[in-house]
Image (cartoon, rainbow, N blue to C red):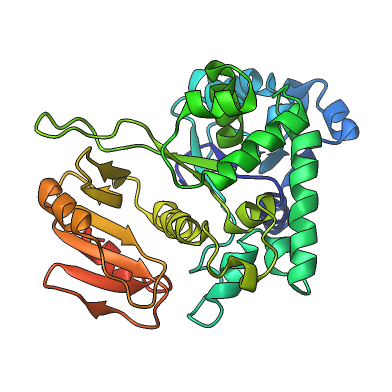
Length: 373
């Protein structure tokens, strides 16, 4: 990313973007503008004059979606004085930023997503894994003094996000309606997207349901995992699977507060699947694509990581004695997968067969090796 004059740091609220950016600005003698503060927006009432005078310094623009008109100013400033790393742009909502970037800063800006803490970043092991599943990866949730405090923070975060943040992002939906939709999806976590059924349950139109999904996905709260492309020899599922991206927020939405409540809960297996998928998609190289595979006859793989050279099939099993179903092996044959992995809450890796290996979530290096990285 060092070659771009501008870098966009994207990610959800409260994930640490501002803390990171302030540290970078301090280390590099940069100038920081918080565009949520009226005083900083006032300082940029003539952005061309102010930013033009800072041509030789790093400029950080936090929550840049609050002043979308800045993109039109940044392009000529960059072209007049093209210097790597001149602007660092932060945003908690991607749609507006991505649209503006594609139109105004094409070829001038790189993008990096800062997600909640991952298993690898926290050095999670078998013993600390239950805490991670319960609290998720948002810094203040993970670092809370106890599980009750963590739950209270996540509960307050959901309310503030819906009532304050979403309107600021330009999404004009009633907070109660969006919370009901989000809660329904938490119970639907990891299942196939069915707009008609959800719309019927909420008493709204299918297009409205689609807009709610786009809004929460654009704010980094949900992930839609797309199915593999068409195979003329197989009847493939065409709908995406939808996940709440952070396990802690998922459990907050369905009011699961303790590990005892999570144990045996119907959502436990799907929660594990979502956690595994987030770890792998968050760490995969840009050249590797991520999809799931499911046929009408029951062949299924939770996650397929593939490039032009190799295909790796991933099964997620929330069990200490994981055994993939017949459909997994059928899907591996359909896909002509080079290697299969079962990710489970186990202490150490072991082989199930010559082509299928069980891995703990805290050591996924074998996946990247199979993909050639």
